[in-house]
Image (cartoon, rainbow, N blue to C red):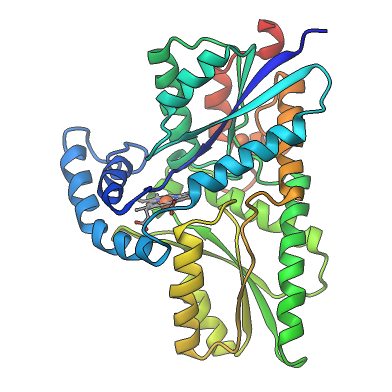
Length: 364
Ligand SMILES: C=CC1=C(C)c2cc3[nH]c(cc4nc(cc5[nH]c(cc1n2)c(C)c5CCC(=O)O)C(CCC(=O)O)=C4C)c(C)c3C=C
Ligand SMILES: [Fe+2]
Ligand SMILES: [Fe+2]
């Protein structure tokens, strides 16, 4: 039996591979229209100016972790683990490719590699559980342009978000549980422990314009808390990594650390929008916020590791891939996403992507 060849394209943000790459990486990021929403003629100048101002603090951050981001190695390990998890599936031969948004390997290199492999189908699988126009939306746009340039025209399924997927929530809850039990074992029994789910922040204007990211972060946290099943769990959602002067969504992770100091509770910080370690977990959470917590007298500070190639997480990704390929129709792993009940109305990304995608079953 001939197997269907499935190219799985894993999207992530990318990170500098050496100190000299920090400035061009930041220029790529801040000149992306999905990130810097100003008129096109201003963007190249303003983007370069913001990148120039951000270079020094970013260099200092990357210096703490050896001058480079570990994101590519960790994403490549996820790709190999996902291929291994799908290796025994009957009828398909899956191979994962990595496409980073702001540093190598970019979408154009990934599209050329996919074309050379000659798949029957492509599955776009962002390594962002929650959809944001700044992350998944931007990566899909870059991928489409790269496909046009490379002449890659293969039936493509786009999995836009998987914020409430049961396997993902369960795998994340297992990591939180392990860290929670370890923290509890170190703390005096009468000291309270609060779990802070810390997500990357966004400028508030992007959310007001209809970005579903914040709502989806809330859905992820609700799903993880349910899987945790810890009665009366003290927990909160907060947002980190603000890098521009505009108003960003809150509460910020710093504000939550201040509240914990005031309430005299220990903290367990769980990254909830990143599935790999990188500068914002290894530096911001592990060094900067730890120092803030210590300075303010928070009576304990612990951190849940990112998923990386955790077997439960990779099994969830494999599940997501199988379901998306099997359906030939559904884009969201979350059935209710088309009726986002709170502030977003109909899920805008699901609609926008649905108009563009090719129905795999029809095309096959
Ligand atoms: C306006 C600026 C930014 C928005 C909006 C933003 C959204 C956003 N980013 C991630 C995930 C990652 N961000 C990473 C690095 C990074 N992000 C920004 C700016 C914005 N991000 C900057 C300037 C940087 C560079 C680092 C720095 O200067 O501090 C990374 C990778 C970092 C690495 O070490 O590899 C990730 C991953 C999400 C999930 C998100 C919105 C939903
Ligand atoms: Fe970011
Ligand atoms: Fe979605």
